[in-house]
Amino acid sequence: MTSLGLLWLGLGLGWMIAEIALARGTRSHVQSAVNRDQGSERMVWTVVGSSLVVALWLGTIRWLPLPMSNTSAQTIAIPLFASGLALRSYAVATLGRLFTTRVAVHRDHTFVQSGPYRWVRHPGYGGLLMAFLGTGIAMGDWLALLALICPIAYAFQLRIDIEEHALTERFGRAYLNYCRQTKRLIPWIY
Image (cartoon, rainbow, N blue to C red; front, side, top):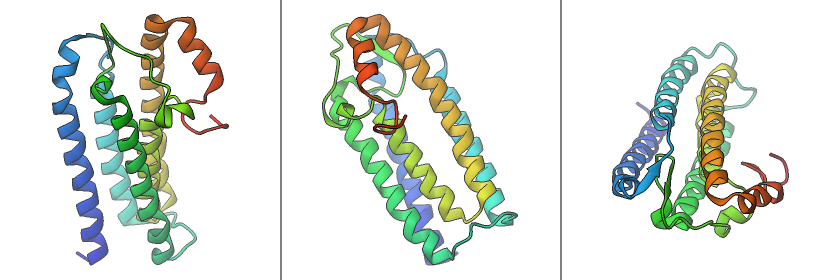
């Protein structure tokens, strides 16, 4: 394995370990909250895992290579991956004890509109999509990139719908007004 391959392996394993630790660490937060998850946590993990396997396979075959050198792809991919994970970490830190990997509403849940939530409603998912975009670019193939991004974006969309329904039930008009003022994932666009 090349040093670049080892770097990506380390980055991927580091991210995976951090996500598992985050999920385990927030389990106690869910116990004191009303669970609204509807199985979406498992669905997201299943889609992410499956998409990564398919994308890695397609990346080795390279049926539709990206029109750039490997060096150029990595120069774009690594900062995208790191920036995406930084955005996710910022979103998680902003929510603090309110963050869970399952959709749950606490009895004393507060409505957070600070940090990255000033600009978008779901910066954690936006950060993960940036990281996966970087990962797909690093694979150097259009099909690998699409196999990674499309299913994960769709799974996140389903999850976002569940979260927004739960938040609308909890906060009503205040949350609907916030939705009118902010975009879901990309500031000023979507």
